[in-house]
Structure formats: C-alpha cells, structure tokens
Image (cartoon, rainbow, N blue to C red; front, side, top):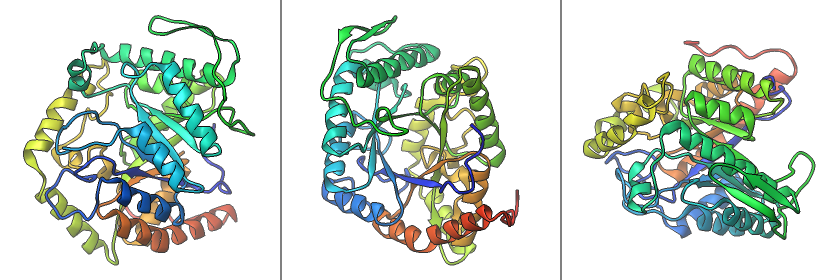
Length: 376
C-alpha cells in the first residue's frame, strides 16, 4: 500500500456531464451538453485520449444550478455500450438503492460490457433527496455505517453462490445472483469506489472499499489523507487505491489559464453556489473532528462543486504534468478530472498534457527523478 510504483501509469477518469449546468456553477460560456448524444461522442473521444474511467454523477432532482439530470446507472450502461475500453463508474446512494437489486443490475451491465462496470458509493450529502422521496435522513456516521453494509452485501452477492449477511440495515438469506459479474486476475468483482473526507469515510475506505476518492486537495492535505487511510487499511489487512478530484484548465501560458479561472469565479451563479454551500455546510460540521466534506471550502472553491480548483491543475501542459506527477508520488493512482468545454478540452488534454505526463513517468521510472514544480 505504498505510493504507486514508477512503472505503474497514472490513470485518468473524467466526470460525466450527465447533469445540466456543466462542472462549474457559473454563467461563463460552457460548450458542454448533458444529453446522451454529446456524452456518447465524449466517451468515445475520452477512451481514445488516454482516459480509462468515466464517473456518472448522481442527482435525483433539480438542485444548485443542475435543472436536469440523467440517472447514473442507466446512463452508465448506455456509455458502456457506446465504447470498447472505457470503464464506467455509476454513482449510487445507499438508502435509495436496495443492494441486492443494484448488485443484479451491475452484474448484468458488467457481463454485457465484458467487465467494465463499477460503482461509486455515495453516502449522501443532499438531505432533500432523501426526505423528498420519503426516506429517513440518517446522522452522518450512521450513513457511513450503512454504506459499509451496502458494500459488503454487494461484494458477497457478486462472489458467493450462497450469500448471507445480517446487519442493522441489510439482511441477505442464502441468496444467489446469476450471472455473476466478470471476474479475472486482480478483479474478483466490479470495482467499488467511495468518497468522503471525514474520519468515518476514511475508516470505511480502510475496511472495505477498493478505491478512495478525495475531493480536490493541495499537496499537503492530500498526503495527510492518504497516510491516514493507509493506516486504517493496514490495520484491516486491506488494500485501497486513491483517486483525486481536479479541474483542468490547460492553456499555452499560465496567465491565460489563470484568466479563465478568474472569469469562471467572477461569473459564478451566486444564489446557486450559496445554496450549495448552505446544503453542504452540515457535511463538515456534523462530524466530531470537522473533517467532513467541504468543511473548509471557500466560495471560490465551491464554484466547482468537488473543490477541483484546489488541486491546481491550471496552467501550461508542463505545469499540469508536474503537479500530476507530484500527486502520483504522494499516492494518487488516478486523477478524476472535470473540464469547461468537454469535447475540446478532453482532446486537448490527450494531445498536449498526457504525453508530457507519460514522458515524466518514464524519467521517474529510469530513476533520474523529476524536478519538483515551483511552489511545493
């Protein structure tokens, strides 16, 4: 569970814009569309430009600049059918899904796509989605306790012909689903991703999740998070990998990239951002150690609703590559990226940024080292 080996390439995922409004809550022009045809073309473009994963968002109702939303699991299956290699991660909510029903859906999607389906278990931050659907809104740590049972049930149903589970939230009695998902070396079942920032989230990752997603972080905060989750994983003899959220603005000069960021924030949809800030304020404050999601996010951070600006992937291709390599050295296995104009920016990333990252990885593998980026 050490940092990724130099020979292991950094993986890349992108946020699927299956929710209207793009990936920033801003009135700046965004040449990004939430519809299927656009996303189908984007998925093909992404897998041909170095992206191994895509993550479909989960929203069930209009909120904070997102007036329209495609459901994540159905949309994920559609993207799997439109691509050849892309792995698609569907974000799902325990409490709104029965794990056995989800396990069956994902197993079918996995077989249909020859082993490319995955899930991101979201413990929940948007109270109105639960209460609006008549479901109880649990206290923070209880939501993560439910998520742990949810993940354990998924994995049992995917791997055991006689699944048994007796928990406080879910109970399974000698249950079998067939077909099982595609299994292979290093992949006994579809990958389970999980986010969060709190101690409860970190401990959950250290017990059961395959991947831990971090909101946008600077170097020091990401290192602290990785070290703590690795410690919990070691206590449980469990292996976990790390993904980090980031928003990419790549331009010929740093000044050009910084100007785009300035314009995004200057044109922020203030009521939507303030509404989002109010909704997520409890996420950090409801934890005993104030380590929850968005606990220290400022207004400008929340214009990109997963703190993607804080990762600092803004500047020239060389500058972005330097930061990506530094995050890899600190434990990142995957970068989960958002963009302003998806079709143009994903192609530009694959053509101008990714080759620089791969060259720096080759230098790292040869043991020559990579110069540390300014500001570390």
